[in-house]
Length: 114
Image (tube, rainbow, N blue to C red; front, side, top):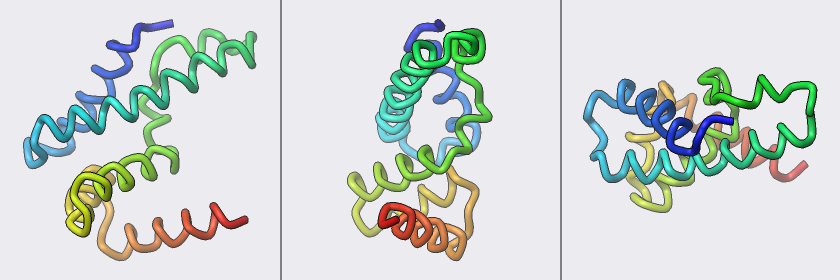
């Protein structure tokens, strides 16, 4: 399996390109640490759980970044760091409008209460 640093570099590069330097690097770096930790743990667990898919879970795949859990991590991180000003950075990294972010937050709220 690729190293934790390789996972982070892939994730960081992805979000750095999206942010076009509109998000402070220290904030972006901290966010990418959280996302990397989540996916590195997930991949390690999936490699054990699904041994026939070991190759699939050896290198981080950017298609996984579109998972709702990633969006939840992004929004939650910015809420914790910025309070009520979380929306602008969240929308930028997730490519969402105000309405789309509002709909996502409502969807996640409903999902957690199932």
